[in-house]
Image (cartoon, rainbow, N blue to C red; front, side, top):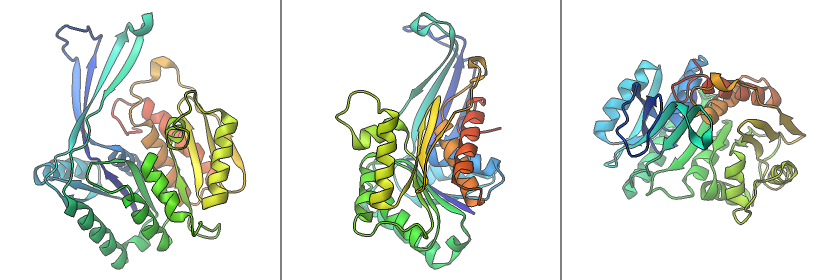
Length: 321
């Protein structure tokens, strides 16, 4: 079983239009609502790959009923810590014939709400529930722990590092799609005791922009390829973490501890791109699944690229079917 953790649960609304006219009433040609958030997107793709998944998050009583019903349809188990904070709602606007920048074509716009603040006891309850999974031995059967996305306000920056290292101590492979203070806290925790090559892998997977914001926030231009390679090689030499850096349409850069990888993205005709929301999450799911299956690091990156490409061809965020 795979365990996914995301602490910013989301109700994702997608509205499709022929074209959006600013300042006017716009009626959607179709719309749908999904349980989402980066961790649920990862979970959905893992389930579509035939994997058993337990998703861990925090939810209010009312939200939990809806999320449970939605995830049950997708064969995803849910472990939800109770909170009074309601899940946020984010909205995707898809225009089939946008005139943005003077060119006609599909345009995807994402409207993102901030998460609602959780109570101080929510973090303690989450750690207790995770320890219970470890103590009960259930995680011994887990193929991978995947931590994705941001946290709702109220959680400490050190939380993801604590959970990741708890799992790693139990020889569970860990993949983290995190950035900023969360990623820096993980590295701080590893500073005194870097990971060893013989241990279960711990892989970070920010995209290039997130890597820049985390380590080169004062830099105005995008990171150059050699700059990314130098950064991820240094992360391995100093902390023992492997890295995968996605760059949208550009090639994916990675370091497995032995060699730098530069793997081209799959080309998609523009007319075949339906919704790019969740492509990074689909990549994470495909990568983690292949790595857990023993496919090897490079093969895992290639499967991640394949899943990200399939997601772009589907209308549902975080989906490859």
